[in-house]
Image (cartoon, rainbow over all chains, first blue to last red; front, side):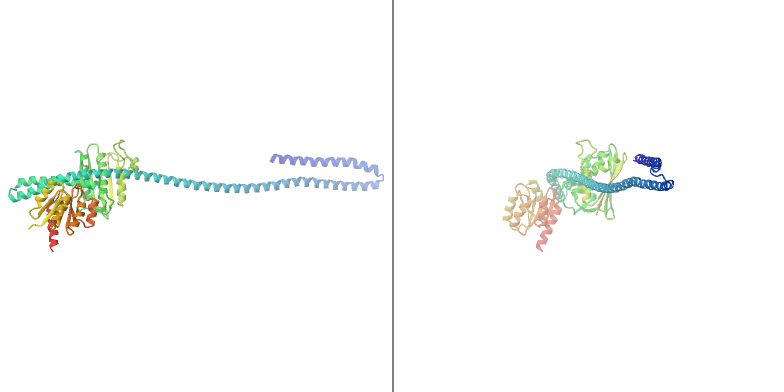
Amino acid sequence: MDQNFNMSTLRFEYRITLAYLIIGVLWIIFSDRAINVVIADRELLTTAQTYKGWFYVLVTAVLFYLFLKKHLGHLRRTESELEEHRDKLQELVMEKTKDLDKAVKDLYGKNEVINRQNEELRQALRDLQETQAQLIQSDKMASLGVLTAGVAHEINNPLNYIAGGLSGLRSVMHEGNSKNERTDLFMDSISQGIERISSIVSGLNNFSRNSDNYDEVCNINEIMEHCLAIAGSQLTNSISVVRNYSDKPLTIRGNAGQLHQVFINVLLNAFQSIENKGTITINTSAEHNTALVKISDTGCGIDEDIMSKITDPFFTTKAPGEGTGLGLSITYNIVKKHKGILSFDSEPNTGTIVTIELPV
Amino acid sequence: MKPNVLCVDDEPVNLILFEANLNKKFNIITAHDANAGLEVLAENKDIRVIFSDMKMPGMNGIEFIGNARNISPHGHFYIMTGFDVTDEIQEAIDNKYISMYFKKPLNFMAISSEIERVLDHMEN
């Protein structure tokens, strides 16, 4: 564009110079000859010469004017056309920019919708998994409930024979004065046996009781003892249990059956985390308006990278078939339902402290 | 004369023990199922204290008490259960159909004092 413009200017310069030269040369050569032919008088010839000069100047001025006008007119037109184009271009660019802005905004909006839908889907998936976990759990507890009810009934009736028999025996011996230190020792041991069996059976009942009542009076230390009695079968001699219970009874309002499940799940995890020798320490205390339960073990601990997943339903580190991955998920949900807090503090190869805070 | 107390249970040993442990203070009448219990009640209108096992063939304890209340509207009824408090038992307590429940193995001292308490209450 620039180069074309230069060439055109150059050509115009040539053209105008050339035209001027030709006209000038021709005029000088031919006009004098023509005047000499037409006019003979010397004085008249001088006057004609003067007029001829003026005429030449006039004609060249007119020609200059015409040439320049034509050329500049062309240039001006081009310039204004260019300007017009530029304006149009600017407008076009602005319009396109506006369109683009709008498209980008739309895209952002759509992106947001997609992100939201994604989050909703993820939430729905979590809910589904949780519901599935709860269904499995309640199914399990229902079967367990039927089983324990049957077992409890079948054990408690013969236990009633023993207790009733013992009670009768006591009064017979008392009346017959045949009571002595040895008979007391035997009868007391029978009585203790009855009490222990009875408390285990009633612990089983508590554990599997299916109730939606969250307003039962729950004695934390008592529930812990039931759980230890039930989970005791998993205890080996190399695991010792240290009980640091609160001095006063620690009671909260909640669902006793579900709290049994919470403690037993945490206790079982603690037992299973200890491979050979170890200690499980249970602390219970009342702090402000909270019942604080800490169960610490000297087991294998929890790796940091799975810490955030341990309460997810179906998450397990056990081999397939050995664990459902529901224990801590159920525990977490039960604690949540009691408006409590479940937290873990763990050091791999050192141990884990599970803290359960329940509002009194 | 010792006051009458009815005990309904399908297990004979339980009936024997109930009688043996409480017969010093009370005259224990036993029945081996709900129907037999209803018959006893119909014949002895003066029985005011009635104990029943929960799980029995045919009619369970709560159902038996439901029928027995028609025969002895002023009776005091107790459930004995080998299991925990079921919804059915809880409902009966809430409706005051039964005064209390006793868990097996039974504590006969507690049962004895409860019978004395309720009999005292009736006399006053």
